[in-house]
Image 1 (cartoon, helix red, strand yellow):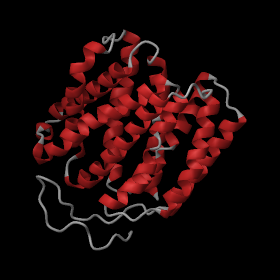
Image 2 (image 1 turned 90 degrees about the horizontal axis):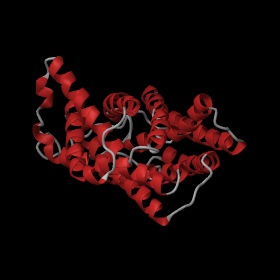
Image 3 (image 1 turned 45 degrees about the vertical axis):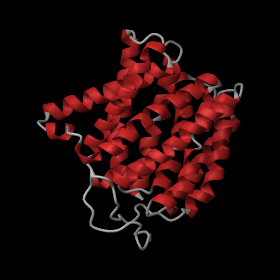
Length: 310
């Protein structure tokens, strides 16, 4: 259970990202925010590896094919979540992005040594209903544009695929190397489109906010995410991320003095109850199978013959 609780703590910290992103969206575009977020993460990870004398961590290794997919995918999902918010509202952006656990609940058992999680399947509609109450009450709903829904749900589907890929390879690679090269390839994709993204250079105050997002909530959080992914099912990882938007609303109430209505309180309670159910009922770790990954050593077959929980 401690691993599941660690995911809850990590997801809770991500609430700060929405507050910072909402502030920066008034002056910087979604692409620019994502570019600086990823660029600062690459800088911190690269300098950290050099200073610590671990330059070997900067060698791409034999998983370059996977990171070549993960990097552009990462840039795409962050852009989609921010763009969906920009096209309609924060509520629509959050709700469409957080359909990802639904895709994970359906796809993870097909590609990973995981059974369909009864805990997640039971808790999903409760949490999604609670999240809808939280977001539409706290953000006024906004005009729901079809394009915003398509962009947000598309990003959520890509996110589910990326989590599945990460889960398949994370036990075989160093998480620092994996995150560094994922971010590098994401950056490569973003650079050609920056000239069309509006103002790229942030002010001093904007750079301060971007540094927090890039260093704390990308580089550091990304490493913690990959480490936890070794111990928690992909379905639970996706579902427990529902804590993030509830955390964002609570932080806005505590730090910014925003109103916390009855619907928000009820919705947040539903998400927390559903999350507690998953924390208590979902196995903390599924068995690690020998997975066939291009370029990695293999000692067993795929799929595994059993998928029972520890």
